[in-house]
Amino acid sequence: MAEPFIGSEAVASGQLTPHTLRTRFVAIYPGVYITKNAEMTAAVRAEACWLWSRRRGVLAGFSAAALHGAKWISADRPAEVIYENRHHPLGVRTWADRLGNDETVTIFGMRVTNPARTALDIACRHPVDVAVTAIDSLANATDLKPVDVDPLAMRYRGRRGIKHARVTLDLIDAGAESPRETWLRLLLVRAGFPRPQTQIRVYDEFGQLIARPDMGWEDVLVAVDPNRPSRRSRHNLPPAIQQRHPPPRAPDRYGLDRRTSDI
Image 1 (cartoon, rainbow, N blue to C red):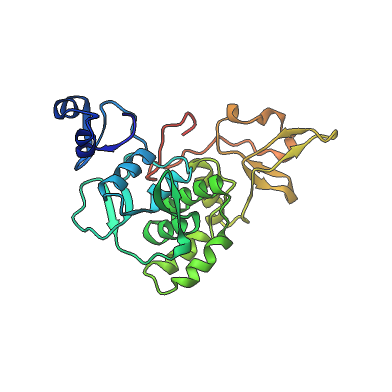
Image 2 (image 1 turned 120 degrees about the vertical axis):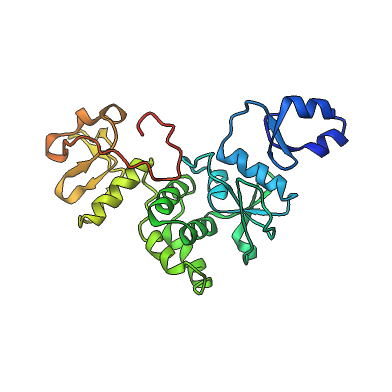
């Protein structure tokens, strides 16, 4: 069984014996098991958390983002679920909250906050840099736009953390394709530069696409690429639109997956 399951249900149905359950599987959360040595991901942890809630919780925050397809969410992060149970196990974060009927979707049979509500929860509950990085990835996966979150921000205008969330939401950009890109964009904005455009397309005189730098300013013909040269066709960029600086090293303070070749 590569997916999480409730051990007692598997034994009761005859799929496993108690001995097999003890020897071949490992508990992620109380009563919830997975095959030994199975790869742990944020999405797997989210499903295990949902099963722990006896299928009653609504997956939210980083867990919801992972199920919506956001990359870079670390499997080491606690699963997050809206569920009224303060006695949660290690590796699970729960909270009780109001949820509108239009704020959830069903993914693989699990109730999950929709992208807009997911973004709002992350923005309200986490530091700006961590939240922007995660929501950038969520927006990239779902085509979420800040305007999509505005109605919820108005609906919950008295919510704790909402002012903090507005700062975060104003900084998101679905064009970011890695935590490093988000980090550099925030660095540029905080240094006083105009907000850069992301994923700029560069064409030659024949109309052929020759490069797609991660960010820059088209009006002044300046491109910035925070990644290694091999990741993009930087050598194809005309000198007039390229800034040749060593790629910055993103600080390892994000609660996001670092297992990539360019991070």
